[in-house]
Length: 389
Image 1 (tube, rainbow, N blue to C red):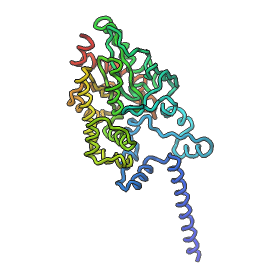
Image 2 (image 1 turned 180 degrees about the horizontal axis):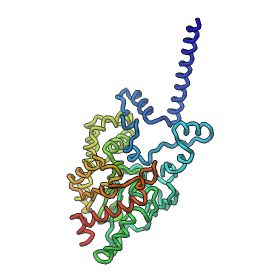
Image 3 (image 1 turned 90 degrees about the horizontal axis):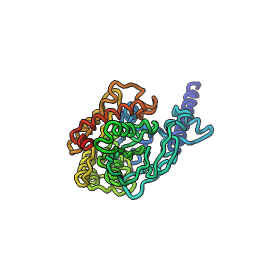
Image 4 (image 1 turned 90 degrees about the vertical axis):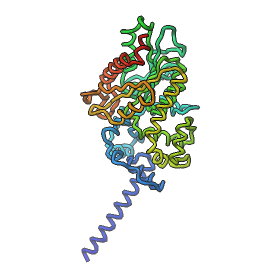
């Protein structure tokens, strides 16, 4: 009899535990703060598709932190409930309102209208982000100069396009690689081959390769550049490109480019799919998408007469990610100027990053990257004659 009662009590306790777990999981999903693996699992069940949770997504290994420096989930709840959920996720109040806050949360971005990009920075903006001042000019670019669209006579102008690493997230404007390269060009070459050198920094936080393609083709030409440089990093791993296409497709946005429309049709992905299902169908075409982007940039370069180069930036201290080497080779195969910037981080340590939780390049890293890029620009057989005719 005692054993029977014990079993009954045990069953009740288990039922109660499962009920509490069900309520907690439901609450986390409803609040949108459930761990990524759980949300992906639920999405898979809803889509009747295979489970898309991979080992990398669960472990959130070194490259996950590097690839998604601005995607740390935010939780804006205050009071006991917010503190409780933050504690579950191992987050402090400081981390919620400090390092990991996306620049978009600060109201610094606009939705981009009428094109393929997702967003841009607001013009004439001043905001503190990651402890540094982010100030934009009248065009909405983080740049120390309020340059005009018309290029001054005797000026050699470079348009630089990239994401948060190139924009200089967490670094003062005077310490960004764009500013440092521009200063060195003018100090060492200014007044001899060209009167002045300008680098127009068009980089915006969270710009992925698809955004950069549009910026190179439709934004940069407005500023009459003599050279366009597009940066790519480990954040632009092949999986991120097909994810971006899936986001645009399922949101009903115009895919704009014929090569993307062709690949989407081949994949079987449709606008009516969930984003996850479209992503699954497009994943095996990631190489084709990146190759297509490089070919499109080369076609644009030929038609516009503006040279386009790819800055392949290594941001890993341990080793060069194999996908970076693949991207560098694919860029070269497409006929683009290709500058693999692999030496700056060689032998580096944690001081190359903003913090142990934020893998954006530090002030020290920007200086080393700028030095490496400068030397490669001067030594490249297609770029050197442009800089020093």
